[in-house]
Image 1: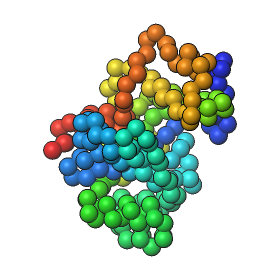
Image 2: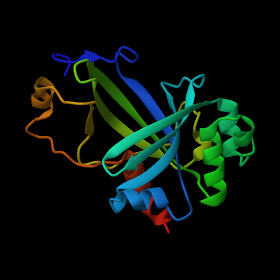
Image 3: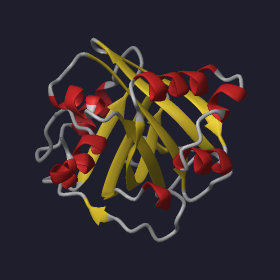
Image 4: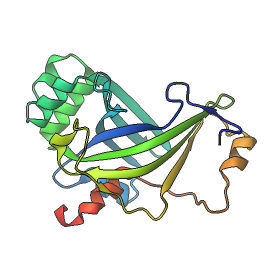
Length: 206
């Protein structure tokens, strides 16, 4: 990969991603993913390489074939309050994404459901604004209060393919990158680390 693309300047080597995903009591986000709904959304809280000074609340949306992401900063203390069941602060910040999460925690009963933890290497190719990521060593934990523990009590996800390759680009995908990712032992598929990790605990689903 590094023969054609450049390492991500913000994360030039391997780094860790830890996310806390939300879903409702009926596993709406999980069911919509499994059933292939074209219009869906999910909320998560994410930080990188153990750096709890930079934590983001994110909302990922998909409408037909268009994907979008909204982000807002949160603090470790705020996340701790959320995990303790305190939600009023989401209205006090004045941030619209915080307020939306609060509204959906009230109306849809969204709650933190699972931690997804994995390693990533990322590359960029400026023509076409291409970003290539390689995700691996995906692990999962149902103990939401362990979000900031260094040694997460997690279990490995059961994937047939140990490395997940994703390519994102704007208007076009350059031929050099297209040829690079068309490897003989890879296949194109829709994949959700959240869904895969939730299904590790299938006996907890309704």
